[in-house]
Length: 492
Image (cartoon, rainbow, N blue to C red; front, side, top):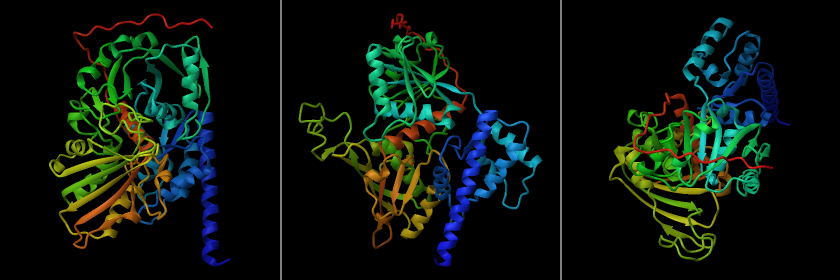
């Protein structure tokens, strides 16, 4: 065995041991003191050692290893402190110290509580309006991710179906099994009397309603809540405002593009003042979320003269499974058998999110016969002459930054195909091997992969977590009356 291989194996064994100790200490703090330890937003509680090892591998920026032994040293110090916040992000804590700065008990306590005060927030109630593809992924994440649970508490799901045992069983089955994303990592029980699913010990009420203003959420103990409308049916201010009429809903997110409310791409424009003081938001489309962060980086670094977007998108539920009537051209043809040319609003949506690109974007879309995993081809004419290594180095800084809700990923795998990006939390993954550049160094072609279900859902959750930290008070909505629904109790 050569020296280089021996050194590599020794380093891996050392990192594995460090990761094991870190997770053991994190589990101990959670079990004995109810202190949740995070690693740049990722929960360290009840996670496999390989999970932390992989995060550490992804956290190598500018080829400098992210030192696990510093994280381990901080974890050991935390075990000795008598008072701790209920949530500690060890990654943020480590990064708050300079490389040359001495970490002692006094400095650790000061940094610890300073970060806690900056990032702490009350847990916000969450209501899911609809329980389709995005709704169920949201529920899975909200009920399993400890880092999300300290910000957002799933309280209820609203559907149009009558609430009975048969419906609850079907909803539980759809949540537990998924043909694309695999089985649910957790336990689901049914409580027929309260019309609830008990998901990993969390009671989630199911409420039947045909219209948003039929529900009095106070009857369910829900106050000042964040509602996520994932039905895709309501996309305008007039109809979405109906969610606010009963007073218990403070803010509404719709997981589809909207016309007359702010369209938000988390990580790009979510902090703008004209957005943060609203009550109704759209998280735009999966394609917009995958493309906008990439174009924003290129615009800031090089300037964009024009860009064409060609989206190769997985088929969705609004297409026909077999040839049949459809209100939109071509979408009536069998989705699993055909490539289907269709329209996309991603170009106009991006121009609103990044105003500098107004009148510079054209966009087309093709639906292809795969159930999930999509690709955006960006042909970008730049204002500066560039080289591919410079572009890759630029995006590498974003890709390798440790963050739970990551907008930009970068992959150098020459064998990468659409199934490889399923479950990838990054909103858009740039295919480095497929990147090309014109001879004059000004026309760049990027291939951006994205999981149009999971990656998009992570963006929605990132923005929801951001809103949870803001001041959320429901405002009175006049001239609309709230209807109370009748008793929801069924006998066993």
